[in-house]
Amino acid sequence: MSAWHATAIATVIATSVLFAPAAVAYQGNHYRYEQQPDESGLDNHGHYTNRDGNTIHSPAHSRSGTVPQGASAQCRDGTYSFSRHHSGTCSRHGGVAAWQ
Image (cartoon, rainbow, N blue to C red; front, side, top):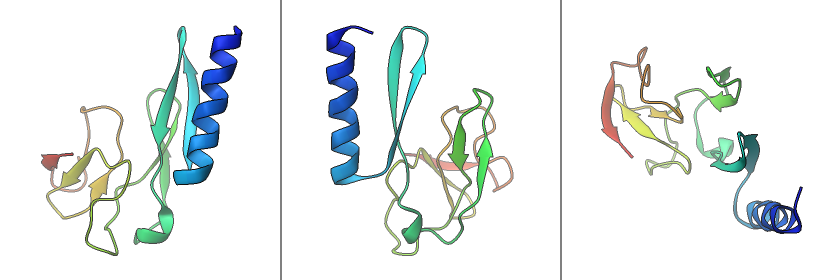
């Protein structure tokens, strides 16, 4: 790992500690930063493993009525999805109403 990569990773981790929980995953030749939702603002705490092997929060309703951090779509049943792929997003929640 180069010094640049180490510095970039340290910056991402430090930022995530200050602002929100995050995951840093190595994919191919780069690191990918994923914003994770604050589970205290959601009505459930389920998770699933996506096709890439990453743990993703299951669709959930927002307790505050605002879009949760890390949401990729709002489903037709009102839940927010945190899916990283369009295929299958909100498939058990009536489909996608809007992409975030």
